Length: 258
Image (cartoon, rainbow, N blue to C red; front, side):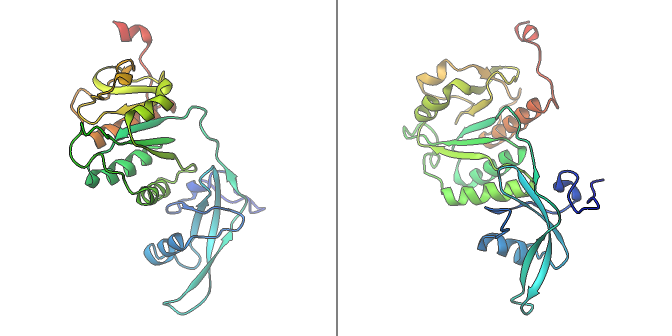
């Protein structure tokens, strides 16, 4: 079990102390919460005097704190966050893994973003389809502010030390022109998953990406079944992180060809 040393410094990752979700701040030294984070912590989660919380800066820094009530009535209580040791610095994996997905309909986008981020990917790219080849609603520009809130809440719930990179591309051509060297396309006709390409692309309709740039991409098979776009994104994220962590092991190249 993780404990505090006699000097008060944390001996290992503070997320193992059993606190709730990580709360992100810009500066761990000042420990200042945004209005939104303050409301969520003390009004929604109802964290109270004496409870322990972990703050994160989103770039690997983690700090255990204890909540101290500093005044106010029940309706207007004010709290401060008192450090319980030193800042712990998590190590980022050497290989960055990511998922790129065409935009699903709006009611499925939140789920895709939330669960893919919870899997632990370092990058998430959302791609529009200005040619209109996908179904209605998928080429609308998503609300960047809303997506950012979903990402931060999902990362906090998953107790992530690092916030992922999240970007929106207006077309597959723009995405592939910039990222193509790292990309593998997910489809039922692909090879067993490997980390030869660490950024996997989910197409809008059964993995089909209607652009010449995609025709030369190596292909990865996620499942023997047909997956919906948000399901495929989550499976891709989980497989990438599991392969990187060696929770699952790649098949040898020899067995790929047999």
